[in-house]
Image (cartoon, rainbow, N blue to C red; front, side, top):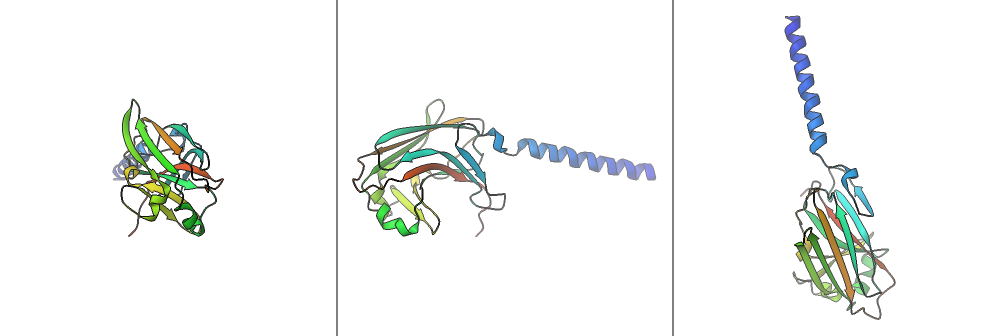
Length: 188
């Protein structure tokens, strides 16, 4: 009888260890990310969980900027353009800028994942096909409905392009941080 219990216990322990190893192997790991400036993981029970920082773009200067990244978290991600050091207090200033911003995300070899373009002042009208501004007491970021809930794979390479054009002369000397956010558990 003792042999039977011991065998059952060892079997249960083996199944548990194998299960934990398999879970670790299929879960996402920070070291998989390549090409990004950084990754912040807010934890399993937070939303959004993953914050992948792709790179910075000057808001006051016209140009096209490209960021190449591989090993993204395997969650639906939103592409956001966070305005550094700006908050809800700067909402009116940001949503009156006539600066045009266009973004594209491509999956290698050339399959388009998302596209969004328009004037930042479109955020005032809050139309679905233009830029919108999400702001709080700690941050402000633009998002476009064409670049939300993006299905990504950790095994694919992506190229994100940001183009700033027709810069508003009132544009502040602020940088935009291109970020992909998502994953986690969104509570009601």
